[in-house]
Image (tube, rainbow, N blue to C red; front, side, top):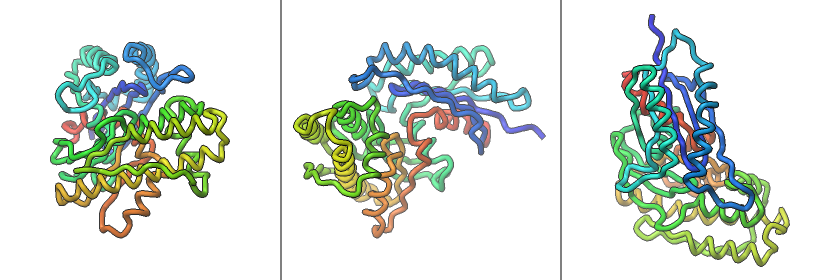
Length: 322
């Protein structure tokens, strides 16, 4: 009996270099290298991100191929080539993955496939959940650069709502940097929020209009507050309380986006993807606040919420396993 074929995926976002090899029902290899950001910086220029990807990809690809044998050959190669499936969506950092997939594909005689980074997030989030084969649901993509509510229908994605300016992830990262944390800062803020019993900061509420929100006003308020409290010298206990309040504001805003998305589509099934969705604080809050609304809410495994190439690999491998 011939073994199931493997699919190789590559994702080169503005945060991580990722390479994955998967079979239909198992992740064979999932390698990631977080891009290095200088202390005090709030991200990377595209040329800097691309340079790091070029250096990281050989390391991960060599390691990935060490996990497979000739009895399980790779029969699909895919990479992310843009942030989202919308006109004008482009970031040079994705050229690193596109070039690597093209070179490997040429060597192995396999035509590479290309998908958006957002498609990869959603596929990774749903593959090992009850939503794996679901044809229609609402997907949330909350990551470092994206805050969107999306209608997923038979593989097609359309925007229902989200942010009109900066993302949840950008608020967390900018707050973290202002507090002296390393970039990206979401995981550290989440950890501090979990250890805080209560918050005490009256932060401005975020109201959704037609499913859309604005977050730059909240960011301005938070940066000013942090400066008043001593910036990077703000006591850790106070940072925990502030973090808890930030996630509470996010949770309330997400609830309003959920209500608007449900009203637009009649769908009450929600899948959360993206790095911000891996926050345990946020998951707990949303589950508690929505528990009596008769909704189906699915959060993927935290590891498959953050940037990865697993979803891209599964998108490319679907045709192999039909």
